Amino acid sequence: MASPAAVKYTLVGAGVSALGLVVLQALLAQRLERAQIAQMGPEVAFNLRLGELALDRLPPSALSRLSGLPLRVGEQPPSGGDGRLAVQAQRLRAQLCRQLAHCPRVLPAAGPPRGVWVELLSPLEPVWLFTPLRSPQRWPPDPLLLTLALLAGSVSASLLFLWLEVQRPLQGLEQALGRVGLDPRQPAPLAERGTGAVRRLTGRFNAMVQRLAANERDRTTMLAGIAHDLKSPLTRLRLRLGLARPEPADRERSAADLDALERITGQFLLFAGGADAEAVVAVPLEQLLAELSAPIEAEQLQLDLPPLERWVQPTALARAIGNLIDNALSHGSAPLRLVLRPDGPGAEGFRIEVWDRGPGIPPEQWDQALLPFQRLDRARGGLGHCGLGLAIAARVAGAHGGGLEAIRSPEGFAVVFRGRSLQPGGGASLQGLAG
Image (cartoon, rainbow, N blue to C red; front, top):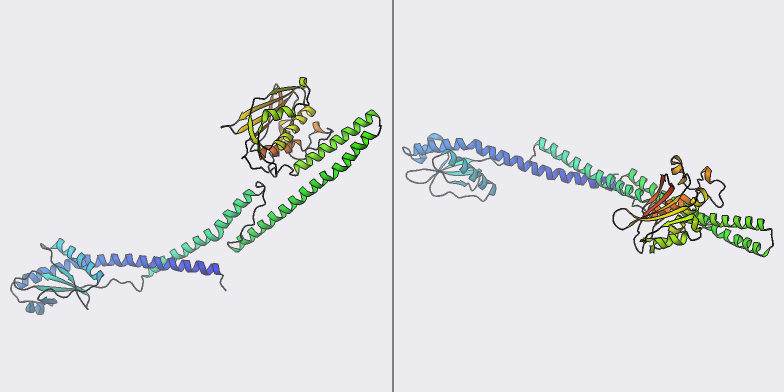
């Protein structure tokens, strides 16, 4: 049993074929009609000359009997109402006017046989010559035209089928695939339409999106649960350290371990998407950077922070820049230098440069350093470092429409955070936007 789609496109093809056949047959009939009139013109003109010469010596009845010309004597003969015949009569008259010294009257005949009356120049009474005209053939259609019409209908139905059932669904699927990972909201399931293969492909895409959403929920719940569950025992440990009387060195080591655990927990929570729903606000970036660098000793820090306000996610941005500062302090050499500048055309972009005097990350290891949970040899053993600092900073930069870059110069090494203002009142997703 044929599917509804097959029946629909078959009917479309049949309709296009029928319409094309009608148009082609009408054009052919018109060309045949013009050719018929052009062929008849000289013959009718010859009969008119012959009849007009003979009427000077013979009566119309004798001329008709001797020549076999169908003549009518008397006033204007009755005319028919066939519009096509009237058009043919006008065209025949135009042909005769070009071939004769005068333009005779040509009238469509009233009844069978089909033809026209042409007036002769007669010395006494009006004489009319009947000229038969064939009706242009419209049915059965010409075989060649029928073949062309069927071919046009088949091609039109095939192209329409490919566009509506294959191309357009695949374009929608392509656009939906391009949004996966960039839109913080779960993509809506696509309507399964098109050919069987396209519908199966769309169904697998919908299943993939659902699995990704489920995995993302599980991952976020797991990491958030780890962070939440660790906070209570960390708090209790810190309280016990405050009540007990351990050795100063043990106390310092325990407090450092607690700080490292808290730092790792915070990094995991942020990497799991804890800042996704943060609101966008207008922030004086020079004040934000000044607050972040306040705990650093004055002799270890240089600030170049002109006033600059942008719409950002302040908590996410502060954590990202804080990670860059911590990396510079842990793996670079003092003094550090913070530079804030507008960036790009217009007044929307900004760049934050974190400089140190160390050798920096080798160029061949830069891409590796931006991956999560990747710690370079130079960073191993750092207190509280889990390989997420640069990855989180890259995600935050991507969420702000920019990325991370590295600068190497004789003055040292810098990690550059580039971004731009976000839409007021909106948010940006940090999921899947790693630099």
